[in-house]
Length: 163
Length: 339
Image (cartoon, rainbow over all chains, first blue to last red):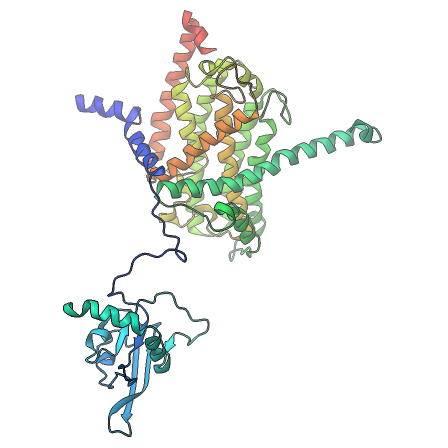
């Protein structure tokens, strides 16, 4: 009975609604957490999985040995590799395509790679303007790797104990 | 000015004057509707720990203009097998009453387009017509979501109209007049004379009913984003949609204006030594509009049967009891408090 009266008074005085309004009212004056994206950015982990890159050894030789482990492990089947024997009797890729529209950025290719060739960089804002622009070929991936090698090497170094 | 108009017959000059006055009311109203959307986005953003639009112009102040242009350039698609005439009539039928009701709103002791005797009745009549726009929109769209939305909206608006009407009866009893200007003048003499004090429960019920009447959150089942997509205007796009949008916000401003006039003393200042003026009215309206946005940022949507229960089984009895209470008090020696 007392409970009923209490409920009656509470609902008639809009008690709980006022509590709710007070809460949002407090948030009205709270600090705003918006990040102004192009000017400001959130911190990234060294393990961030963004755009892919193919790396080279310091002497300029490409790391990839066309073992096709990444192609096999890729759950989205986004990687296409063709290989042949080079003149110096080493196996190298002739085609290494990643279809970024299929890729789910799981990082399996990176994990499977025995020579740390295919890696995922911190780059997250890239785009394609025409159909096919997001199918990255071997040359494009190598170019990304060359351009960001310092950052990539630094991130690998930082994380090497945990791999 | 008089010299120019002497060349014209009386009829033409008054017509021109009236049209100019209408423009002087409707144009600022459109602007305030545009900036109410900006205000809404900012307020809701702030309450969610965001900062709201800030890219177009300084502090995002040109955002409503950009939105308006976007909507203008969009195509109006009419659905298959929809009734084209009704489909295009519906937005007009929604916005026309929303603007027409402004004719009797007094902005100041003299600033009123038509100072008619039964101003309050006129406003009530006009706001009631708006529901036809919603019903027709839902019917003409030939879509089940739109139809469900309009059914809900019709039932809701009809239910809350009664509670709203009864709260206004309380105001009429206090003011002894249907003229909005006289209702305001009945409250002169500082903040203690405003009708909000003797009629406080009625004010709360009026305001909540007003939120329900304008189909705003938490009573927005007519739109019900998560259930029926967008409700009655789901099939509308481009300018036709913008007109519905305009009408909703114009109605919000209108009911806030009415609340300010009838309960918060309109253009009268709260303390007597500060002069009265239109600025006070605008301040009160903005204050009330802020509550609309605050509600939207706070409350989840009511369930449909809860809305009906609130309207019929709670608001109508409370208003009736309070009207009787006010009537009885007027006969006692405390009657002065209610005038």
